[in-house]
Image (cartoon, rainbow, N blue to C red; front, side, top):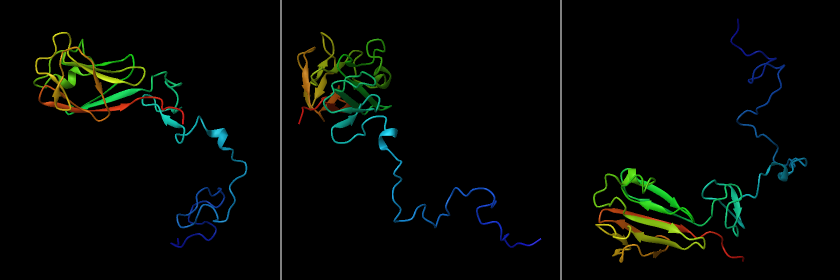
Length: 194
């Protein structure tokens, strides 16, 4: 037996099988090669790629036009807000028109946030609600009719009176009591026609 390679077999194996991979140091195509004229980009595209005039739906990730109010794929309104609170575990929750987000320790009243807020001192069972109107206006209320015991704070100011809507803006700072803090990110939905 000899350790030398068989002259009929190259480094890629059996000479009778078609070679499908180029060696790492060889380019796949020649630099001057023309693109394949048979390729039609329209055949492969499922929809418009995100770019000028489109964006991705926050809920399903499909591309939608910037002027659309709802995603045509999942029918979710595009106006929404995202709240990120520094709880343990961290809380990141979304509200959109028709789906306000309740913040509190009561799992029946605030099912999306109760677990993350259950060990947070100073957070009431029914502490606050945030939401977005169909026109993209975001808002925050403190508790129910009686309000929360330790207060809801917006950019360092306590919200009063309880149950009154206060307008939110992108990057507003929110606090539930004095210890739980977070940031609001707002996407108002469709952009006006250019």
